Image 1 (tube, one colour):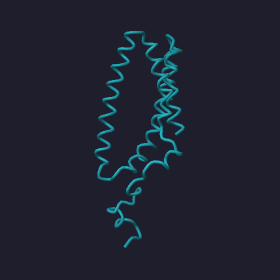
Image 2: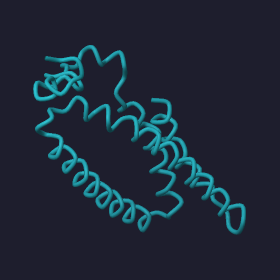
Image 3: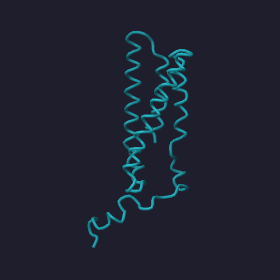
Image 4: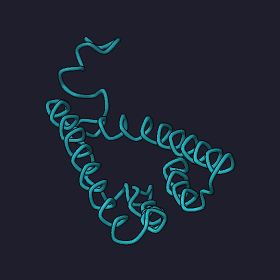
Length: 137
């Protein structure tokens, strides 16, 4: 969860970019940190979510993630392009950064995990996998 929360703060730094070398160094640092945090968080969250997905629906789930992610990126890019045209690019970047600061509130919390219904079959306990388990008859 730490990497998921940390990824939200980096884009705000893009609002403070200046011309020449200091600006490009800031952009490189912000992007490196953002990509690192996203890579850590996504590589931990996706398998966890797939473990709670019915095995017969994994392909559908992955397809839905891919389609919805691409559609959301396209829509938000267009929306922020319009915002940048109406105001200024720096204002649009700052607004996006401030809104991203609220995204950690949307992350799943451990204390809420007990309230969610559990998977029908715990990870690696699906009936079709039982016979393939070592030590099973």
